[in-house]
Image (tube, rainbow, N blue to C red; front, side, top):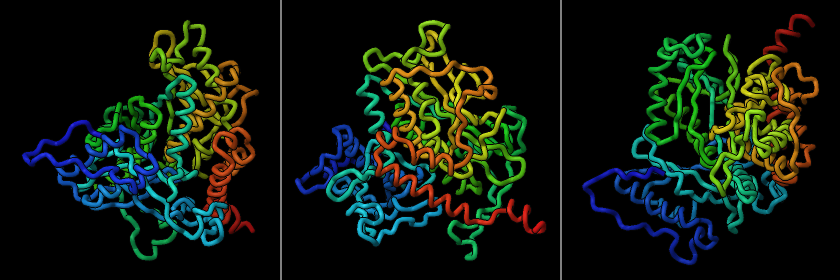
Length: 501
């Protein structure tokens, strides 16, 4: 939440009725920390002084999409006491927003009484995530965590999964830190396809055109071509207070990259959620389309990736725990164990880094997108790129396997859990390589979403750490997506078979 409060001649408001009364849901179940209780009072001041009319309450669903409700400002104190009811079927949807569980059967297809009959669960606001949205008139925003009516956490909450993972790492004596390096495409929106015939599920994709040609990588002239549109988005992100580090032009046509300052794991994931949502909303309001789809089906485009930089901070010394003592090693012994864990669980965790059918078209030999599990020093061909060295407090590992559409909570949680396993078991990574595409012993990354989902389904490690219920749930959601893909006749099939046979 912003530390500053907009100055006003209006009298200071009184504190809101936050978590008072024994019957209040949030207080009764002890769902807020002291920090959140204090933050709620500050939020009330922001709402009053800045004259906000509406506040959006959102939670991150299984796909890393924001879903929620908008409340009038005078309803916020009630939400701060009892949360906001929202339908459980949102947790049963695939990427087409189709409900893929039989929710009107006993247990709703989940084997859980709370999921029967398309009833409600409860969004509990996290007041520490409050922002005023600069592009939406008199509108505030905050993230929520999700609970059932008896106060128990919903087991399909991806934000809670990351909270638990970073908590486990903290108990081991380390704080997980992440830096975001995210590529995306920014297009001119020519036709939004809003005829009634286009309102299919999913809808007809819009017609778009480029804002700039590609290939002039990191040239100032190409950056300036994108700047008129990019500056609108950047302004909005800066007004949100997001920790922007750089905005860049990428190699492909109409392709951009944004990097953020390192932050604690949960904060970094929250930042990714708000960044993606804000970028798409701001772009659309100004006649552009921002897409985090890995490889849009337009001629001459290049795939976009999400490179996740990660390190650990020793909670006792506040020092970077990956920093090696000498130049003879890429990382400290602990850092090498962490890398060994990432390598050991890379295939099973691939679906968290790359959760769409489209993402696997990015992995190709001898490219900047890794198609095998290897690591090395400052090498953009490996999956895990070691950066830094002795005396460098920014020493870190960059995982280059992710796509920008990944759910940030699951992507980061998969890394934390795998790295912690490597530390716990004192695993040793294979030797680093300078020739990642000539490393015969390296495991191949999954070649498709189908292969990645199968790797997770059969994996004992993530079942142990995330629970059978969540793994089976996530696999079911992705298999519904795969089934629709496999039942769709594609342009490739039409060209390959129509005339021949």
